[in-house]
Length: 218
Image (tube, rainbow, N blue to C red; front, side):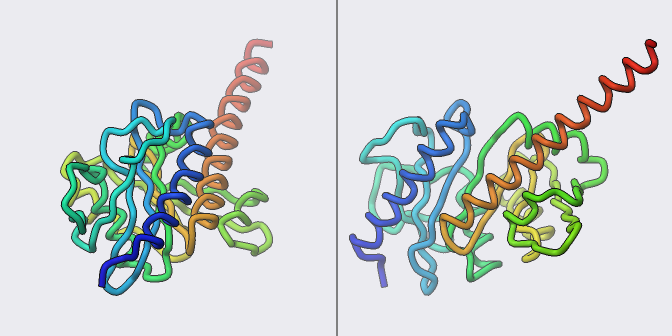
C-alpha cells in the first residue's frame, strides 16, 4: 500500500516547519543535514529531504517519499539525501519512531571530536536532560559517538550498533548528530535538548580553562 497524497502533503508540511526552524538557527550550513518523517510502518515509507537543496528556502521539490530500502516509491528526478539509509535504520530499529532529524552544528562537532577517544559523551545533572524524556533526579546520559565513515552503509551499520532506546541520539565524529522521536515535535525537542547540552558543556570547558589560566597567571 502506497502513502496517500494527503499523508504525503501532511508530512511535507511538517518537514517545512522543522526545516525552517532549524535553518533560522544556522543548523544546515552548505545544504548539509537531512530530515525525515515516517508516513507508514507497514510497509515502511517515509518522507525525506531531497539531496543538494537549499534548506533555508521552500520549493515544490524539497522532499520525496522512499521505502524501507531508501528507494523512491515514485518515478522522480529527485535524489534522496545520501544518508537516507540511516533514517531507514532508525525506523526499523525503533518502530515507534515517527521522525528523524540530522543537523551539523559547531557545538555537536566540537563535542564529537573532544570525546571521540571515549566513543561517547556523558553529562549529568542538567535540567535539559528532561527534554530527552529522562526525569530521574541528577540524571546522567551517555551519547554514543561513531567514526565518520564515508561509506554510508558502513556508517549506518555503526550507528545501528550503538543506538539505544534510552538516549535518542548518536553523534558522528566531526559530522553531526542523528536524533529521533515518536513524532516530529518530540524529535525536535530531543534535538534542541542535545544542542543545548553540547553548547553548555563546550562553553563550560572554555570558561574553566579561562579561570585556570587567570589563576595560574596571578
